[in-house]
Amino acid sequence: MSEQILSVKDAIIQRRSIKKFNGQPVDREDLLAIVDDAVWAPNHGNREPWRLVVACGEELAKLHELLRDLAIPKWQELSSETLGKQMEKFTTPGGYAFVIVPEDVRQKERLEDYAAASIFIQNIQLLAWDRGIGSCWKTPAFLDQPKFREALKVQPGERVIAMLQVGYFDEVPKGKERKSAAEIVTIFGEQ
Ligand SMILES: Cc1cc2nc3c(=O)[nH]c(=O)nc-3n(C[C@H](O)[C@H](O)[C@H](O)COP(=O)(O)O)c2cc1C
Image: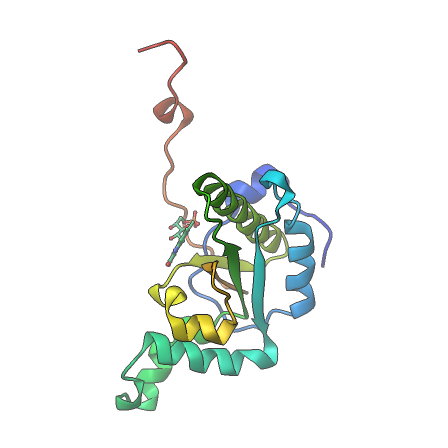
């Protein structure tokens, strides 16, 4: 399914971070098609400051082992049942996209690149939502660990800013209240 169903407004308002996936796999072609559209994010100087490492299908087993080693250091001491339960947060998503940005030595460019990559990520989340695929942007501490960076072949001067879990889901969580425009806007020149 690739035809757009949701209006931009509905996609923005209705998208929720999905933290409970149902285990259904995500096809790599679907994920790549989403990325192909998401790259139309605004980005200063057309630097397109992003690249991704994705895992779907066959690649997932090896990735699960890596995530287990990083997130559950004493996993060998757990029963297979307990380990299985603790691993559910990693094994139930149907795919992964790790988003990598260059870390420009100039502060302005680095901030611009992080901002642009964030927009790119939301584009992915909204386009996925439009196809019935949920996602959650996660930032576990291991994204900066050498073992993880090596496994993803992250280069010096690059940083992994997102572990994007994608997948199908049975329930949409309720969105948390947001502040209204009246609460966050002041009119220029008024106190
Ligand atoms: C930069 C960033 C980092 C996030 N990191 C995590 C995370 O590590 N774990 C997590 O469960 N959710 C994470 N989230 C998702 C937020 O929890 C979620 O967006 C927030 O609760 C609002 O819910 P909504 O996306 O459904 O509107 C992150 C979101 C952003 C933008």
